[in-house]
Structures are given as structure tokens and as C-alpha cells.
Length: 241
Image (cartoon, rainbow, N blue to C red; front, side, top):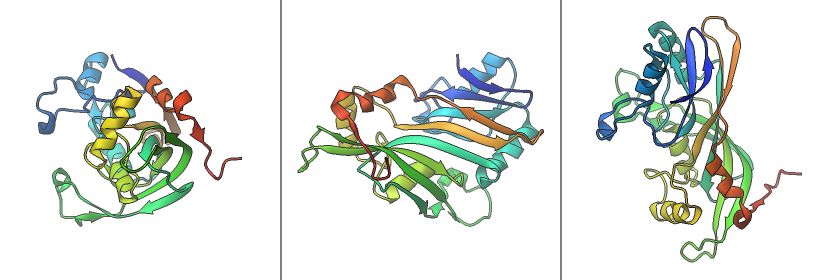
């Protein structure tokens, strides 16, 4: 059963666990469990996904309870107007304390369903929350540097956060497409946890019917505490007091 974070007559949000697909896709033909079907059966009524989270990403996932609301919210997610999202991620290396990634992204193949430009504007704001220096050798280096980040996408492009973090040479740990395979495997073995370290923590938007501000949050899972155990004490970022 999915954990329901928000429910009204038009919208429902759940806390998606990592490893669960939003809906059926040919890329994972062997999967038999999907958030859409689980929620539909749980509520006993049809639901429409209004945005996507990657299979490995956990956190706030929003569905509509009718097609008209789904269209309205889908447009808001794509444009970013009246909507804000905040993610937590662990990345390779020590990024700057804060910054903005303004880097256009090409449409992914199954997004090319209309005549708009192939290259899309994409904007992500970031902030470094904690830095880790792990006693895990990598190549010529005696330790492994990682950082806990707050990522706030201002646009809604496919895989935007994963692609943007790769672009600035700080890929998200556990990203098998845009990250470093050996580093991902070594960290998974060292931590005892294998996952994409990306979590949709907070979603804020104007309700499409009432116009009221809706704020939905999903707490980090217990596995995130492995980053702050005794063997990986965080080093404060330069901006911390």
C-alpha cells in the first residue's frame, strides 16, 4: 500500500518508494508493479499521473483524479509557473555552496511528439547542505568526496536533475546512466545500500480549482542516515556559521 501524503476531490499525492515505476513502460517489460495501478486499486477509482519520477527516485508523486485536472497540472509542471519543487541528492565531489545551472537539454526520444524545438531551456538552482569525505579510496585518491545537495528545478525536463548534475561534473550517486559505474558500486557496497540517491522532498503549487497554495512534503527514508553515521561525519560548507 502506498503512503498517501495529500488527498482532495481532484488530486492525490503519494510517497513513492525507490525502485517503483510510475506506470508501465517497454523499457522495463519485466516489471509487474506500478504506482499508477497500485494507487488506482488502493483508492478504487481511476487516477492520472501529472508528472514523472524516475524508477530510482523516491518522494512526492502527484496524480489527478480526472483528466481535466491532469491536463492543467501537467502544463504547470512543464512550464514551472506557479509551482516549485525541492529535491535532496547526494552527488560526487564537493560542488560550490550554491549556484544556478542554466543549460538547455535536448528532448529525449519519447518526448518528441510535437513540432516544438528539439533543444529545451532548462534551469536548476542548487545549494550544498553537507560535505562528506569518506574513507573509501578511489584510484589515486585516498578518500571519496560526496555532498548532500538541495536541488530546485525551475523547468520540468526529462531527467533534468540527473543530466544537469552530470553537466557540472557532480553526477548523482547511484545514477547508472549519467554517473560513474565503479564509484556507484563501491559506495553501494560500503554503505550497504544500493539506490539512486535522489528524493523529491517538497512540492508546492497553486491548486488548479481553488487557487490556494498546496504544500506537500515526503520525509527522507531511514537509509539516508547512512551518510551521517560515525564513519562519514559531514564537513560544513563554507557558508555555514
